[in-house]
Image 1: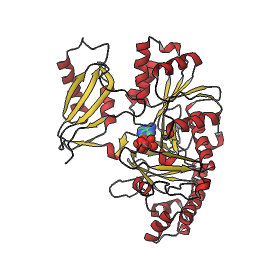
Image 2: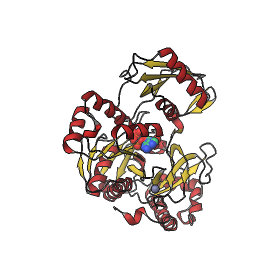
Image 3: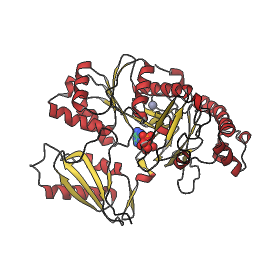
Image 4: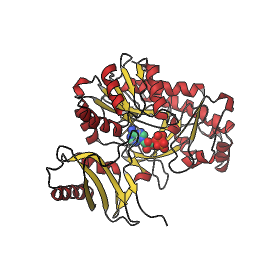
Length: 429
Ligand code: ADP
Ligand code: ZN
């Protein structure tokens, strides 16, 4: 098993290593990044004040805007000659967030990704088909380097050309499929259209991540493709994919705590929450050279579980992420994440997997959901009755009012990457 020792460290070992590494990282950031030195000085903190893991809570937070403010090269802690790679996040909201890596950072990241594959059950004998986007997005290269590091055969199909994707899977007998869960759903439809029975494929494990997806969606993917669908979490600021992954127990994602120190905070008061309480996840990277990140606020909301997992690993688990604080909608006073809506819709057999939430008016007193009917039910079900049923289910589970529009299968645009679940048609004033 790849990096077996690191995967099976016990809690005490992990925490001892965390403390040693945090001290070193704090020193590194303070000495080499003016941005951090200024932040420390503002609160009167010196690197030597960090003596225990509890002291970490004294360190000021870092947020995405801090990284954007340092565009183009980011908060570099090494001379530019030592930087060997840049990636950047999509930048849908303006200036992209650029992240940088030294050779050692790329090495650490590759090991982490290889460890994720191994933890999820992938072995060097597997044939990995990587359908994540290659380029500035960290998904493609992250999954690629990890597979190479583990020693598998890796086929870099990247996104696009679904027909070729399918014929590659068939001809090369790929055993592991890497893509977003949205793309996996689309592939299932495309297989049907192409008349390919999933039993003709050799895929046994899916490595799906980069966006929230529900347990119901997992069941659907596993059943349709006859595979184990494993969840994997990461973000470009934290190298990319490879921060946490599910083991075969599928009961939370193991965060590699020898590389990432994790805290949960109340997003309003910014107080650290006790383990087991849901809050915003905050990470401190423990050995990043080029771009140290101390107490980085992810905006992702989840619960951390430090109990030893049934698989024998003691790395803490992040229970599946339902959404980001900025994806949360408040509808008639009820807080709701698109993934909660997905959970309910996927459980209704007459519906397809594609849906979107359309925001029409500034004041959200009800939800407008467009959802496709399942192809085998289209033209056979009474649409009025079905939309009532869907509305009633949403009302019963989430206590919110919803207007439902049922669409013909294939109407909602499919994605190769992350799904766009919320369409904001509200007029900007
Ligand atoms: P961006 O989307 O900003 O370009 P990333 O691709 O790095 O940047 O996206 C990171 C974000 O994607 C995370 O903060 C999280 O919200 C989401 N994400 C990634 N993996 C998962 C996962 N397995 N489950 C839920 N959300 C995820
Ligand atoms: Zn486990």
